[in-house]
Image (cartoon, rainbow, N blue to C red):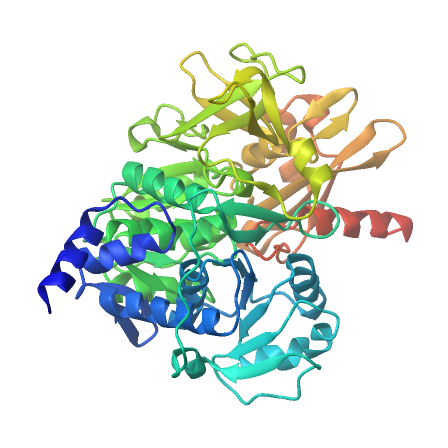
Length: 542
């Protein structure tokens, strides 16, 4: 290596990254031979990951990718999936991760709405969504990681992944700043079509720095990537891992046993999941010594039921639990330090580093301790808004009355739509989504509060509470549940427990037993689908 190359590598290692792809180049300069990414039997070192990102970046630019052009990535987790996303960033474009479980209709909506210029996918997936491509006028290139190129719509060129690294005139990278868009994450939403949340380099790098700091990530960590990379918390496993120079192990979740083997065989030190996933893992069989290397486990995307938390603490005796809360519009907002778990296991904690979290009334004034209000997030992690949706952006991204950004302009914060309560010490407690709250007998009822209470009965393993129209009550509380130990024909024991533990207005009017509960693409319980099914059943007289 030349003296100039040594100097460049040293400066890269020392400089604080401000663009997303620079967290890879910085770790490649610091730990070039260390493992960065593992997918099945394949491993890339940081030097290899950096080289793959640069090849993808060059290939995108050779194909005319302009600054801020979108690259959609519709793949399961793989080395190429990661290289494509970070390569789009390095090229000056923006990546759009598409959940691999989505079908043609949903993928077509994301491609059209984002105006994707390039699609990176596999041959089988391209064949499955082929009909959707005809209505994507912005699409000019499809890159296949495997399979043969089919007949494409006019104006769309299809090439193999290897062509991205092919010979061709290099094109200088577009100059970017940290406020530029780097990604669009599509939220599952509660109603209507998914909305694209626009994230900047600043959002991503600030989030990685903050989360890695309180999780204590180092280059010695081995992080298990279980959640979809199209989910902000799933992508966070990459950014926090790469920021610290850690190794990230990619795993598309199939069965709990696959996770058990991965934790044991890969000597995993950190895992993040959502409550429904943790419910399954808590009931898995963990052989002696299989969790010895795990130093932390974390949850996000909902409140962790206490019985599940207790089982996980028993399964991971040496690990610290981190209970986190976040929203795609601001990446990550709060966490509960492990030392507070026994004192307040129902809390979502306090603000993460470099964020301020407020509990406000509708008029923007602060709530008192114990008074329910809306969680509002301000700071560097607040995203740029919703892609091509100014009305929705104006509704969710608003200034806090009296707050001013540098220069005297109103600073935009994200109003989460989530109802929380703050205690006297500033710790927060989730009460429910504003659009999921149940209005029954004149009371606003939190479905989460009902679910948490009934989970502790030991009679159910999964449960969702929803409100359905009722002439007498306004909305009646109905719970849809999976019974423990194969039971579930008699609702009386669960209802008796509810009457004992809950006020009358929270007691379910009905229990619907299921063998399993539907989940949305991010692994959360699909409340919208469950409610629609209940309403359809009522209309049919069932």
